[in-house]
Length: 425
Image 1 (tube, rainbow, N blue to C red):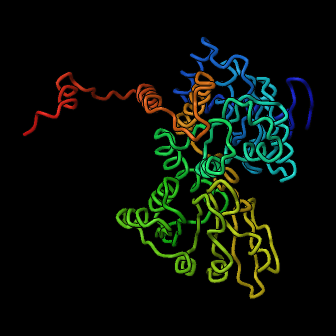
Image 2 (image 1 turned 60 degrees about the vertical axis):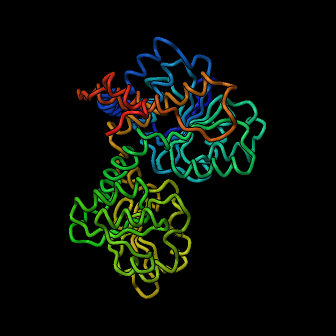
Image 3 (image 1 turned 45 degrees about the horizontal axis):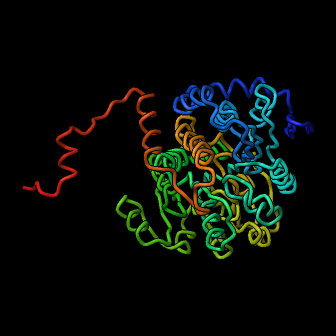
């Protein structure tokens, strides 16, 4: 259902899904106390008054509460999906119907529709872009470069997007500052590790209902997301194998108790494969060729290009849907590879994404990053920045307070000792 208007532009599946969406948004809000505290302050102070924001994100219950927080701060926001399979249609409907926030997102939308929404977001002439994978920023630099000189800045939620932003910086095409939200400690230590770990396993289990215990489970990439997936898979009884290109991360995986080997060895013995690298074709044609019959492949990195699905299609004589979000690619030799969620983010394609309690910190980072950009308009270099440490610590302190945990503080004697070089043994 599409509708055009000055402040009510939207393109969603069904506005009548709003009541269910509102219930789910409010349920998630119960687990997001830090964002709720920020929203209360924003409501009183209006630090984003008059600011236009285009947000490209997964349209989930947690994102809805971020949108409510931005709106409370006085901003005018338009939301689009950052992934064709990550939209929760009832949430999109509720944002439009209950909070008057324009949304252009439909679960299962085509690439053409997705790009139309990206362009619509840019046509709203935003002051700030909240991006998830940097597609909006990249499209702006390619197609509407005149906007780049006038925006206040952008925030980026993903490792993939930050890689792209740093490439833009290196190429000299950035004329605005960017905040690498993903690099905040209260984001990647928790969201990437605990959020991705739990939600990825949730998506795989919902899609397949296959027992993980005793299976060879290959985690491709051992960054924070990979660490979380490996940890949770081991907790389910799987035999976890890690593949890596970084020798330091590879050693870490070994010392964490996992088997480490090249992909061309892991491909022969894996029952499940999960990619979490942010890179291209990390599972490629030569890997598909040597996989066991019935090997199951999923992606939990931002873009589906982590899997070379084009090569897999060319190798297959038939593609059959076996369950929702489960497609079997049958080769000419009758050996099959099973792909989950069309190779897109399995935790959002087949499940609900990260739990609200961990997204509480991630979206607190987003909200405070937007405020930081507004407060420092014209003062920041046109480079990729990390949110100041004191803001990171404030978010962690608010989270501890919200869950009823107290910690120690430094005594005057400790502070004096840390500032001195004279006192020793």
